[in-house]
Amino acid sequence: KLLIYFAVLIVFGLVILSFASVAVGLERFNDSNHFLKRQLLYAFIGFFAFVVTSKIPYKKWKDFAPHIFIATLIVLSLVFVPGIGTSFGTGNRNWIPLFGFSFQPSEAAKLSLIIFVSAYVAEKGRDLRQFKKGFLVTLGLGLIPIAFVVLQQDIGTSSILFGILFMLLFVAGANLKHLGALLVAGVTVFGAM
Image 1 (cartoon, helix red, strand yellow):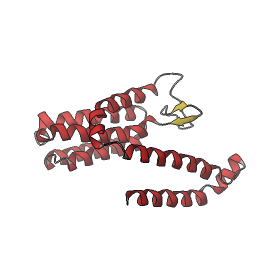
Image 2: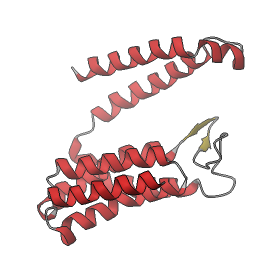
Image 3: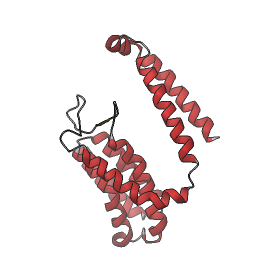
């Protein structure tokens, strides 16, 4: 069933993209289907990754969660290294070129944050309702990749990461007063930025 939803989302996205990108593809690349072809390649890669990762038992993800998290932090820090991190017209050095493609480590941080925080609260979840021992520690760990993305001046992605962290804490059963204070603080900080 999940595979059907996945396929429907891909097809829907490709149809929308094909209509929205015809003029730009023709103007920039002399190919009205340039963006559609590129997105089809990404869809194929994504589908392959989906099939492979769906075969991995979730307990394995839990075992590898700290390694995935640390690797993500290392890659997030690489964008600040001259000659590695690049900017594509935005002024923000938040891309890394690799084998003729470029990727944003902040996109990988979304998945990494979900895996790591989920594994962490599965292990330490009973302490989550306590402010210092559980909530603050989990929040602090989750804010590390968000801080890297904020330093890249990518406020949109950092606010999405914050939303992911907030929802994970909510689903894990954090105290509603702590979550309320976090929400106010987050809206204030991101509003100011």
